[in-house]
Image (cartoon, rainbow, N blue to C red; front, side, top):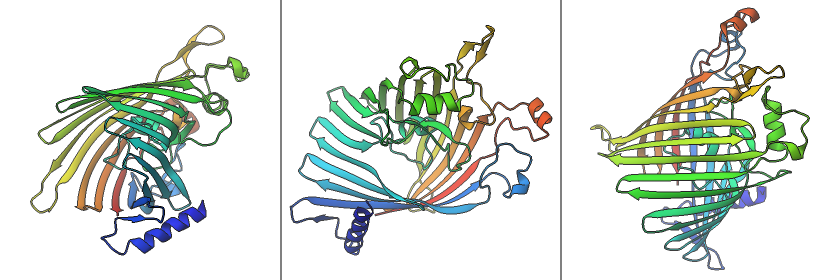
Length: 399
């Protein structure tokens, strides 16, 4: 893998000195297009940094002091075997490692598209902002290995997917990496792998676009139902001694999305609901995007406002003495049990066709389950939510 990455970089270096070169043709006659991007970021989390400012807290932000980083560098190849068949290979580099992020073979004619390989689910959106909606991070950010079919008809488009189910895992709500939430993670080689099946449909009526989908399968044994559900939720309503064949491995998620454009303004809303074993979750977001022209700037500025939630829904069960209780109440010590909301305000300016600057502010609210009584008893600060609003300034350079 390292040799493949090295060769890719060498090819890029030898071909990037001329702006006229947009692709190369190898001796077999296959044409290869290359592109890429680098994201450089400045991040500042709410509050003062330093250990002294967090001594009386149970849940602490890892880095409150302003800092910079290269979020990622991407090197992308698109291989043309014919007018209808292409192969895409995308490498992703950060401060610690490089890896093949996406790779898939794609067949496309006038009405039908077939894709085989590793990519996000077909219902995923291409981001406008650096930050995802909460339900985007939780449900359709992670990559999967799939065979996907899609066909366009006169009034609507249908699609279906068979994939290796993505394992449960953890990811960040925004740029700060202190309080991770439960997500459908990137696919990887894993024992007990199961399949997931998905159907979707979309249609457009003028400027109104609508899509709906349903995915179902079984939890991975025992990466999902035991490692993440039994061990990570203190009151999960199933015995830790349950046999594998008797465990609840139900899994599904479904959702709908609509957007409408009028007067140069786009309105979008999305809702998702899921069940993993006994764990019910749901969430939504609504956003408004508009391009405005300022007299002192050559190009327009894209403004975006978004509000979204991701909630662990109530699951009432009976205790041993017959009293009902919610098995998934939020616990301060376990961030993946928290209900969350996220307000995103963003301004994006395209300096050139190959350079953008993004300024984004995230206002995050969490329901941690903490009580004043517990805080007083432990002689610590009360934390019904976390002070972790975040500012991001990003320079995105592409080629």
